[in-house]
Amino acid sequence: MTLIRQQDLIDSVADALQYISYYHPLDFIQALHRAYQAEESPAAKEAMAQILVNSRLCAEGHRPICQDTGIVNVFLKVGMQLRWEGTLSVTEMVNEGVRRAYTHPDNLLRGSVLADPAGARRNTRDNTPAVIHMELVPGDRLEVTVAAKGGGSENKSKLAMLNPSDSILDWVVKTVPTMGAGWCPPGMLGIGIGGTAEKAMLMAKESLMEPIDIDELKARGPSNRLEELRLQIFEAVNDLGIGAQGLGGLTTVLDVKIMDHPTHAASLPVAMIPNCAATRHVHFTLDGSGPAELTPPRLDDWPKLVWEAGPTSRRVNLDTLTADEVASWKPGDNLLLSGKMLTGRDAAHKRIADLFARGEQLPDGVDFKGRFIYYVGPVDPVRDEVVGPAGPTTATRMDKFTEVMLEKTGLLGMVGKAERGQAAIDSIRAHKAVYLIAIGGAAYLVSKAIRKSRVVAFADLGMEAIHEFEVEEMPVTVAVDTSGNSVHRSGPEQWQARIAAQKVTIR
Image (tube, rainbow, N blue to C red; front, side, top):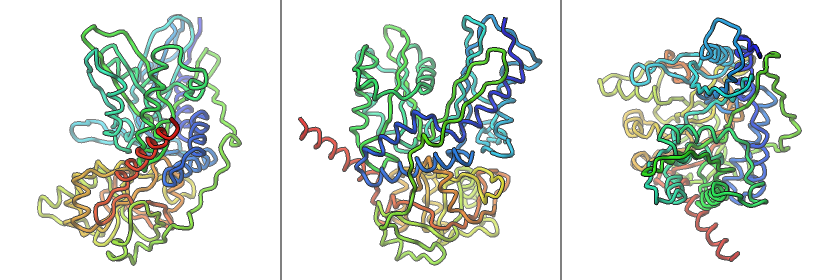
C-alpha cells in the first residue's frame, strides 16, 4: 500500500505553482508561435510577439508570466488504496503548499485572493485558500493537476441552460463577442456540455487542462460528434476576426476543448470558460517515492524572437504632454511612453469615488490633472527589481468610475487592457481624453520599462495601492481616441469582413 507523506504533497504543490508561474506549457508556446507566423494583422502580430518574448523572459528570469498570478485550482484523484502520513487534512496540505509558493522570497507571487468577498474583501496576502476538487478513484496513486486562473479570463465565464433543440455552435458564436477581449486572446475555450449547471462549469474548467491538439485533429479528421463540434467552433470563432487582444486578426482561439456528461431530458446546460494567453497548469503523480519532479522545458524550445519598437512608434513624454498632442493620436497608433504616471485599480477607484461623494479631497501627493493612470496591480519586486511584473488589468471594470475620474480630477488618459464599454467611451469623447492599451500576457516585458516606483496613497490596499511609476519607452497602443473611435470595434469588424471575403474567394 502506497504511503503519501504530508510534506511531499506540500512541497509538490508549492513547486508546481512556482513552476507554472514562469513556464508556459510547451504546447501553448508552439501553438502561439504557429499563429504568430500565420497572422496577417500587424496589430495582432505585434501583440503575439510581445506575449512570446515575455514568455521567454519569464522562463529565463523565473518571474511570473502575468502580474495576475491567479487563484489556485487543484484537482486531486485520490487512489482508494493509498494511505496518508501526516496530521493535516488534504485541504490543509494543499493550502500550505499554496502559501509557501506565493511567499517564496526569490519569486514572490501576487496575493489576489480576498476573504469576505461580499463584504470587507480582505486580501489574504498569501493567495489561500485554493479551490480544491477531490475524487476517489481505484489504485494507490495520487494524481494532481495544479492550475492558476487569473481574473481576466475567469470573469468572462458563461453558463446557459439551453433548450434541448438549441444549437450549441450558434450559442458559442453569439456569446464569444460579448466576452470582449479582457480574457486576453489568443487562448483556449473550455466547454462543458450536460450534467447539471455546476457540472457543466466544472467540465469546462477541467477540459482546459488538456494539451493543445487542434492541428492534429484537423489533420486526421473528427472521429465523433464532440470532435466535429470542436472543429466547427474553432473555425467559427476565429472567423469572428476578434484577434489577439481584440485588435482584429486571424487567430482568436488556439484550441477548443469539450467535455460532456449525460443530462436530463429537458435540459441542455452549456458552460464556457476561456483560458487566457497566460495559461498555467501542470500535472503530476505521487507514488510514495517523494515529491514530484518537474522537468523544466529547454529554452531552445522558445522561438528566437526579439521585441523591438517598430519604426512608426511615436515617443511620448508624459511629463510635458499636452491635450493638443493627445488629440492628434488615432486608434492603432503605437506609442512609447516615458515619464511619470499613477496607477489605480478597482479598490482605489472605489475609494476615490467615495471621497468625492463625501465632499472630500484626494490624499496629499495624489494629483491626476493632466496625467495618465495605469490600471495595474503589480507583483512585489525581488532582488534588484524596481517592481515585479506589471501588466494591465481589464479596463471595463473601471468603466463605472470613468466619468467621475475625468470630471473631478482632470485626468488626461488611461492605460489598461482590452476594450471599453459605451458609457466609458462617451465620457472619453466628452472630456477629450484618451484610452491606451498595454498587452495582456506581457507583464514581465512591460515591467522592464518601469525605472522607478513608489506608493503614494492607499498603502493598506496592497497591490491595489496607488503607485507612481516612472517609465521609459513603455509600449502601448491607442485604443480609444479623443473622438471616441475604438480600435476594438473597427479592428474586429475589418478582419471579420476580410476573413469572410477570403473564404468567398477560395470557394
